[in-house]
Structure formats: structure tokens, C-alpha cells
Length: 442
Ligand SMILES: *Cc1c(COP(=O)(O)O)cnc(C)c1O
Image (cartoon, rainbow, N blue to C red):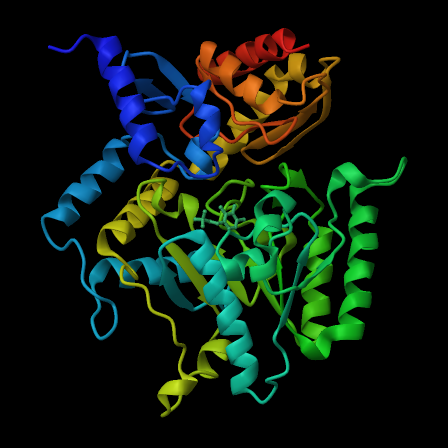
């Protein structure tokens, strides 16, 4: 038998030799070891040596009901015995039909048609293409531009990068990317002294109004992350912005694309973030949590009106987009099992109680002298840490691991986005350990 430590170091060196890890300067791993995960259970990940880590970021915002969830596992095992995959062009199957019907029932009324992709960036691409193609089919082919918010994130394929405004992800590829305009973000952290988040949202909406008034003839769609701009550092903003944006988009014949890839599936406290603004977007994008964090799947939901503009005798008027794994039955079954858990466990109400509990026990963080802008929406918490360390994020990550936490700050923004199955004891541990990490980084 290979001794344990040897098994770990063996896996790490093989990984560094053969795997190109995402969003990573690989050279950093000369000093920062990878974390080899052997198994997961609930909110915990276990490494090869049996050491555990609380998955406070739901494995990049995808997990909802814990790792190795027995109910999702059972649904997948059942599906594996029936049908693992079939192409969706010319064929159909029960899981994809059921999922489309159930999403239509749950989403804001009028989003009756589901188009499937395999990841979030593809959902963005699909929505951008569908929007521009709709205008082309309806006699407005000049509407080909898109707008997004400052600091927006909608994925990292070339089309998605054209509506992503995070310099780090964009700059190296600038020459390959189409230029689209951005408008001011209603990010609550930018309010002027004495101004409310709501009045700031209105002020930003005025800037959107001005932009649309001048450029609407060439704009196909406005794409937005409702309520929380995740990759901007969990920038939270007032729902009034979305209400105003909806009115403006309707007035100027511009589609509103709600990118709920990160914030959908209950993250903000309602199943879909748009519900809190009481609006219906023209496109609603889902991915990440849709399968409970099990399998890659994305959905673009849209309206009858948009669907009908493609319905014709000519192939070229139809929507042209193909993914090999569109509507994969296993992924759809995982999504159905995820929706079942929402219904069976009254998850949204349970989360409300959990969030209230966490806000009570988070006092030592909220009032910590190094913590700024402590904020919460639904099951997302974030704050900035005043720190002398330029490499704060990396230090925080490493120290977090020593305290059994998977923390993955963005710059000096620490955030928690735990799986919904997190218990009160685990939330308490999260607060206590995070305070320790911040203390040791002062
Ligand atoms: C993660 C994310 C995406 C991209 O999803 P991928 O599956 O990583 O391609 C798009 N939009 C938002 C808001 C996201 O958080």
C-alpha cells in the first residue's frame, strides 16, 4: 500500500503535469499546493488525508443541497438505468419535457419556451444570438449592439466576454472581442454619503435611460445580473433598478436579458431574483445551481412573442445553435430532483430562517474593525476587509484551509454562498473561523 502522504503528493504532481487548471496562474502552484479532494458530503469536502473543508462558496456557486445528496443521487441512478443521452434535434424525452414544463410554471409568467445549453457562457451566447436574430426576423436588422452594467460578468467565451466588464478576464483578449457599451452599476457600495440604495438605483437608471434614448435603434438587448453582480465582488443593488430597466427596455424596443445563472434557484431569497422586482425579462438565463451543482446544464427561457418570430417555413429563420449535449437527460433529471427538494423541504422559507439566524450570529464580523460594507441578500453574504496585504485573497484562501474553510475571496472581498443544507452549528463555525482568519491577516 502507498502511504497516504505519498498518495497525496503523487496526485498533486500528476495534476500539475497533466491538468491546466481554470482561472489560475499555474506557476503559483510551485508554492501553493492544490487541494486533492477525495469525497464530499453535505457542506463538507474531504481531502485524501481525511481533512475536511467547509464549502462556503458552494464549489463556485453551483451546489445547493450539499455534496452527494442522497435524493439527487437516487434520481441519477434511476436515470442511468434508462437513458444517459440522446440528441435533442428530432428527438425528445421525458426529463427535458418535464423540466421545461416545471420551469415555465415557476418562472415569471410568459416565459414558456426553454432552449438548453451546457454551461452559463453558452446561455449568454444563445440569448445574445436569439435577441439579435429576433430583430433581424422582425425587420430591424440594425439592432445588433448590446449593453451591460459596469463590472458585469456573463461568462468568458468571446461573445460572453463582449458583455463582461471585468478587466482581468477581458484585457488579454481585447483584440478578439466586439465592443459593447456599459452603463453605470447601481452597486450599493457606490452610494454618495446620505443617499439611499434606492435613490442611487434611480440615478443609475437615469443613465440607462439616456443611453437608450440615444442609441436604442442599434441596441438589441440589455443584459443584467439581477440584484447581485457576483464576479464584481458580490455587488448588491436595489430592485428598483430592475423595475425601471424593464420599463425603459419596453419603451425603447430593447430586450431585457436577466442573467440568473448565479442568482437564480433561490440564492437571493426568491426562486428567481426577478421576482423581487416583480418583472418579467424577455430572456431568463439559468445554469450553475439548476442541477444542484451536479452536472453542466444551462437554460435560456423566453417568451411566446420571441419564439413566434422564428416559427416559419425557412430553416434560416429558425434559431441556429447546436450543442452536442443539449438537454442531456441525466442533467435534466438532476434538475428535476433539485426542484423536488425545493418543493418537499419548503426550502425558501427554511433559508429565510437560516439567513436571519446567520445575520444575528454574524455580529463579530459585521462589527469587526477591519470589516467594511457587510451585506446580505438571501443566501449570499459579503464584506470587504481592510488589509495591508496586496495578496490578501491568496493568504485568506490558505489560512482558511488551515481553519477548515474553503474561502475564495475576490480581491479583498470575502463572501459566503454556502449550500442551503448548511446547519446552524456549521454557520457558527463559519463565523468563528472567519474571524480568526481575519485576525491573523491584520
Ligand atoms: C458563472 C456565471 C456565468 C458563466 O457560467 P459558466 O458556466 O461558468 O460559463 C455567467 N453569468 C453569471 C452571472 C455567472 O455567475
